[in-house]
Image (cartoon, rainbow, N blue to C red; front, top):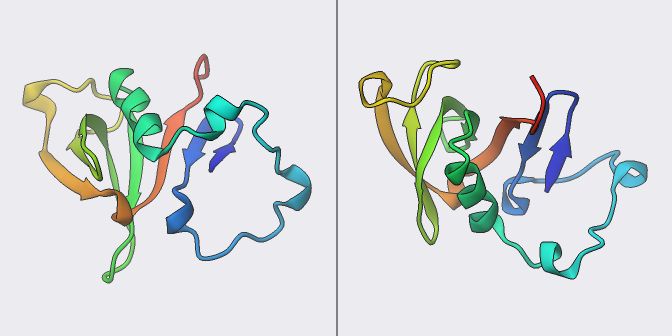
Length: 117
């Protein structure tokens, strides 16, 4: 599911949501059968290809953790996220760490809207 905000988009894996409330009149069904069939991995690969600066919230037993970075690789059921200081380009020397994150642990992936600030 993609939530469009003024300057950002939030990609939320369906499995990450416990419930949806108050979206009824704002929900728009996908009109394209091709786009409707595209899964999470495809969306994440597009973000990786664009080298998009992301804010990734990972859910878990210890509570949510937010990481800022760029997706280096998308596997069948995981991503490798290179964490960087927000606003810095992804360069070898600016990477704090690379984390392998299973799709099942992804809660929210936020990115700037295309053409936005």
